[in-house]
Image 1: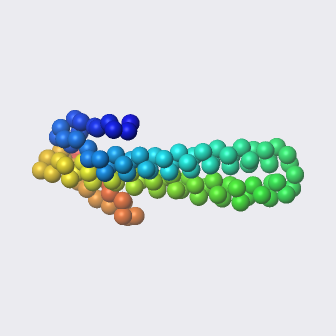
Image 2: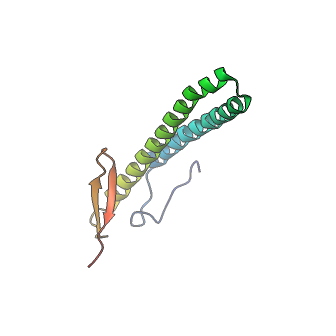
Image 3: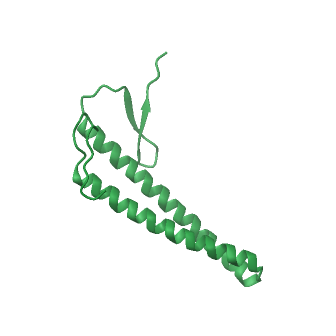
Length: 117
């Protein structure tokens, strides 16, 4: 994807390089976390299969780490979504698409579509 540009989005404009860099950076972070999760899951499974009490106790901490990693991935995707939405909104101002921007309570942008009737 390096060097590629997206066209046909946001009223035919091109998505700027900053957005692509943000996407790339975030996807690299996500992939790193997912790789770490794979290793954690393998260790958790091995500990579970061993049925050694110390290994089972260790799983508590490993599962917590896994849950925290999943939260981080969700946060990264939420940030990516908000960044993308802001970029599209900024490049398509004046577009009457019938959407209303709001916040989800955590400071992330959401879009809601009005439904007639």
